[in-house]
Length: 296
Image 1 (cartoon, rainbow, N blue to C red):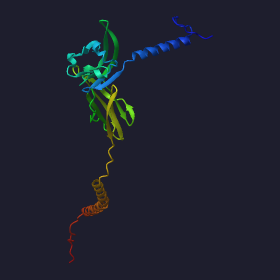
Image 2 (cartoon, rainbow, N blue to C red):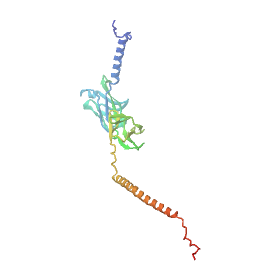
Image 3 (tube, rainbow, N blue to C red):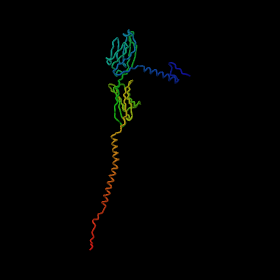
Image 4 (cartoon, one colour):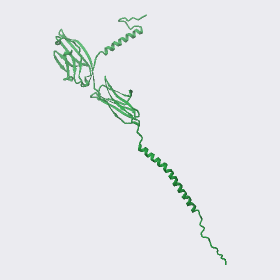
């Protein structure tokens, strides 16, 4: 038997139909929660936030327009008079001709947040809300192009480099790409200045100098990114030292000729020693004695 879903009825006993019902409910909730449009800009840029209320010229005199940020008034327009709150003074405009669009110049990080356009219309002596539109403003500070510097040699064949960037917002995610493959860096640090709210990020990477490398330091923040390339080519092998080779050759030839000469000198010296020893071994007997007998 199939399962039927009736309005205002408890959850169905059929597990499959109950799961389908739950899925549809979750999808509806997700669409509701993500229905607020977003606008992203950088610090010092300008932004235009839509209100989206269509009105007639005759209706304008009976309208009140309020732009608010998270419950705090940014700008009001009542009976032709525009009032801008101090934080937005001299950098906020209201475009009446474009359905009360709000324009903010020279953005600060503190300008980020949820903005709401409220339109009230006078009816029978009282003002009633006729329109409500919200938009989320995301403000980022662009990071400087990363700087990659040499940071020592942990060993003979290992070189260490460091990637550094600062002055950005929101919180960054730094990654290394080595020959197209993502590699986790070492000593990665992220710090934030409490006053400016800007971040500083740095990370180190070790690689083998005996191979060629194509390295990228990549920093992602919000919907933006910045990167720096670093190329390493292994040093060429040193050519043989001709002077050193010549010296070795001369020494070798010298040794070859010196050995027979030394041998000849040794033989002569040995013969002289032998001759000298023979002379020293002869016994001297003195002159022959003359006989004392004489013949008469």
